[in-house]
Every structure is written in C-alpha cells, then in structure tokens.
Length: 201
Image (cartoon, rainbow, N blue to C red; front, side, top):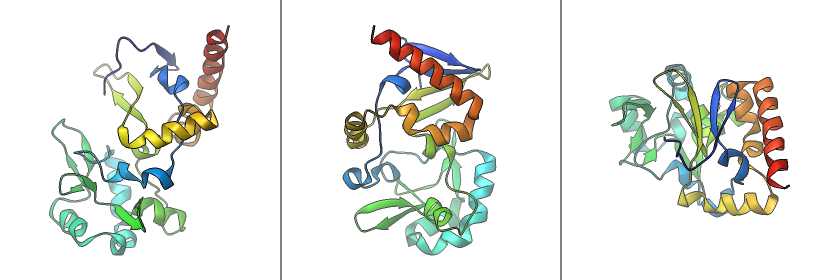
C-alpha cells in the first residue's frame, strides 16, 4: 500500500489516513458483487501471528465447509503463508481463492465469519478483511498508515454507498473501533465533520 502525494493526509492519534476514507462512499452489496473479494486477486488476506493461531483453533469447525482443494492446500502449507512481498497472508487455492471461501448459491462467503455468526467460534475473520476497502500498512518507523483501496469488483459497493451517502469510515465503524478503540474513532468522527464542513463552505 502507498499513500499517494496527490491525496491529502490527516492524522488521528498516531495513525495517518488518506482523506478518501472520509470523502469516498462505500457499502458492501453482496447481491451485486457476490463476494468476489474472497476469490479475486493474487494473494490471501493479511493476517497477524495471533490471528493465525485463532484461525487454527477454528479449523475443526470450518473444515467441512471448505473445498477439497482448500483442504489440500491447508494440509500442505497451513492456514497462512508469506507472500512475495514478505507479508503473512491466508493461504489461497489456484493462485486466487482464499482457502476459507465457501458458497451459498452464487455468493462467496467466509467460512470463518459464517461459523462465528452461528455462534460456533469466537474468532470472526482477520481484521484486514473486516477493514476492507481500507488497507493498513506499518512503515519502517512504526507509523501506521490507512489508505482507501479502489477495486473494480467493489464498484457496486461504491454505487450503493453513494446512494446511501455512507462514507467509508462510517461503514467501517465497528472494525475501526475494534482495531483502534472508541476514543480514536471519536477523534476521527470529529475531524471528519470538520473536514466535511470546511468543504461545504
């Protein structure tokens, strides 16, 4: 992830954010996109070592929902691997599908989240998945940066977000609070309101 020079940056606490997180609208529309974010791309979802351990604890529960190909990949290399950029990410099938993808009709769903919502596990899904379309990166000096990531498969989410007038940061309130805390999010809201008010003057 890179934060482009042409996009203004704001700071909330110790975190740098692209202002697109405030100005862009977004709301997932599963009926339109069918969960393509789980099966598109060339790498898995970024995970931490702690999340990897949590996922491993869920394996027995979600295993029956996984495809035979996904089970083979997990047997061979585990639930996660280090990608070409040196990041720890969830394992994938055939160079694209996350191993935890399962299907409900035409829709691609996350087996981990499905088990969590059914009350079968305590872990929902990697925070990187919950935060999408926000991408997080920790720079060499320890600074955390958040960037809005545009992806063609998420065009329906952008269109729905615009119809609802729902900015990215509001759509992702729950995972942002989970990641950074209530006080941090309250500061983000205040800055967003001030930024929006100045833009409307």
